[in-house]
Amino acid sequence: MTLDHRTTYVNTLRSSIAVLVYPFQYMVNFPANVSDWASDSFSSRKTLQEENATLRTQNLILTTQLQKLNFIESENIHLRSLLESSKRVGERILIAELLFVDMDPYKQQVTINKGSASGDDIYPGQPFVDARGVMGKLIHVNPFSSTAILITDPSNTLPVQVNRNGLRAIAQGTGHQTRLEIPYLPNNADIKVGDLLVTSGLGCVFPVGYPVATITEINIDPSLPFAEVLAAPVAELDRSSEVLLVWPGGKAKPNPANPCQVDSELKLENDSPVEENTAAGNKAS
Image (cartoon, rainbow, N blue to C red):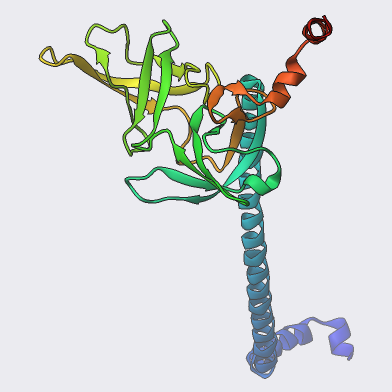
């Protein structure tokens, strides 16, 4: 102890002995160190796997919710467009949903979720539109659903006029959802590619001035009396899931014998008191 206190020789000896003993100490502690490292490693791996699984589940849930929100946003935009469309129509309207779409290439028909049992005076021949333009008209009305043909159905014809100059024409379905034919137009008719066709109101089926199609192609053959004119519907016939049923005459359905004449109930509503008084006075005299 005296040498250790008064000299440094013992410190040097102690350091040398520590260097020699260190490998034995390391080997003695090695199993414990390996055990602690393995335990930490496996614990961290398990924790990471659990966190990874949790994050994947949360990501899947959030992705699904995002898709739903995107759908709701698109539906909201579409419904807003329908409301704006109803303002343009200026008639009595009713929103309906598509239930079924006929996939027959020779038939352009759809089924909607409104029928005679709804109490809304739905009738065969009633037009329906979407946010962009005319879609078609009803052909069969059942209690809880109705069948309608689109304007592209080969059996459908629609009186139209060129919005630019008022030229009257007929739009006929071709069986293809992106193409209408405008027959019986002379080669010298004042019509151009890009012209907008709107409903003319003739026949009293569709409201006047509603967009129908845009002219896409005009082929003129001097050897033929009429030009070949094609147009593309402006309505989203293959995308719309909600439609607007329209009553062009007002609140009541048209008289089947005369579509341009509304029911007597609506006519009485529109009669003025002056006319009623005059009729009563004539009867009394």
